Amino acid sequence: MGEPPCYAHLLDDAGQIADPPAITIHRVYDPDLPSTGRRILVDRLWPRGVKKEDLRLDAWMRELGPSDELRRWFGHDPSRWEEFRRRYRAELARPDQQARLREIAHLAAEGPVVLLYSARDTVHNQAAVLKEVLEEMLGRASGTAGGNASLPSI
Image 1 (cartoon, rainbow, N blue to C red):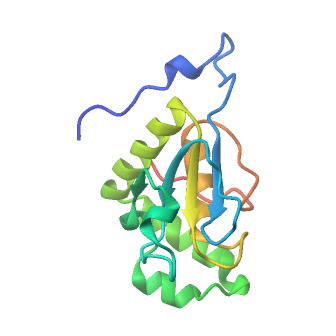
Image 2 (image 1 turned 120 degrees about the horizontal axis):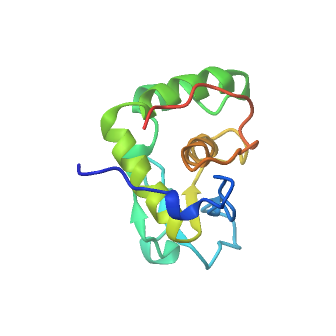
């Protein structure tokens, strides 16, 4: 796996990230897909009815999506959101997932990253959790997916 990336170049004199990397999430079915930034699909399954050329992806990191078991259990039921977040973060704490997260964090340190997803719910989805985790890894607060759940180790 090699050495983990160093983010020291992002720190200001006070040791804070002066200009935090932009990580955004966007639904693949929305007509106004961002044209700037690295576009990464984070769904385990390909979005129905979407042509690959229409997404203009830089990467499809299907392995970062929640496990089939977790995805089926959640079923995009908002009442299961907090437990989904907890379980998904536990999946993301695995070493193979940490390597994938570091890869995206490295891209985010270089420029904007857009995490693409297909869920109807724009708040309760895996991309929101991934954004939260990545922003924590990069040392910035997210405030988008709610709460201070445990951070996967890096």
